[in-house]
Length: 412
Image (cartoon, rainbow, N blue to C red; front, side):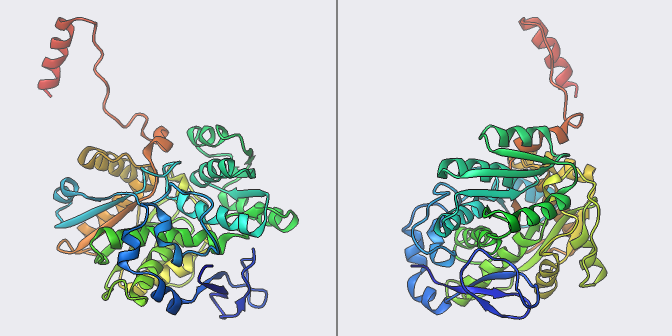
């Protein structure tokens, strides 16, 4: 059995049983998973973790499941890349990329959260899973849900990139395209979740689903030789990922896996959808909803559910936030590709571009260790780079034609 003691309201602290619920019925605050950390501390150690398979389930005592994992058995434990070439360009001493563009079955960090959500959906006895998505979650629920034998309903905004739509349809879910932005989709799905007995992974299963993001932080600490970084830069859509990365560091400290924790947490958003970054810069707790207008569609949540909590983490840890333009996003995607050979989607461009701005402004110190979280593969958002890359060299099938092209290449 697991070490979950129940669900706890993040506002009033009221406790609930482990059920597919997500809102406190008294104060309407969001619910999160509560654990028996004393029991966990006695059941897990660096040594036990290191002996396990290289997937996210190596940290299973800290995840909200009762029995054996039942989904996402090949997800997690993505590379932590020492980014020496990029570090030289940015002028920093110790820089790492947490690279979630690879290893995962659908090539984004959403495979982490869906692994937990679908395992929990099976435990609860659901036969249908669903989600509201800006793309990556749609792929993950479609794929993992197919393998697990669920009926699947996927709801997406009509403005989503064509490549992301195809990457969901290949798994043959029921794909529902909504005429509106993500916030419109999410509101509709909340109504549907109240009417049908479906496991909406980011609504009624959300308290469990969100815990999967913690595995990024666990892996970073382990891959750094059991130490937390000085700085971590995290992209923000709902804000949940940022809060869970920080939670993972705290949990490892609290159960004795690490002894020190001085990490500063930094938020990255696109200028066309930056409610969290704006609040942090303005020094306010009020997250004002916006209408998204950015190429970083996977981060385009104008009314972020965890925005307040993300801003709290940033302030409490001494971090900061930045937002970046579409052109800065594209430039950062290309910079990461040509320096480290990592092709990130637009969300990754946001994170790197924001980190670059914060390094240049002195918000992130150049002599400290910094981890940049890259959450999805660039093959998902190739459209964003059309017209922004070098042109290929077209030649005839002859040596003379090639050598003529080579002269032009050498001339620059």
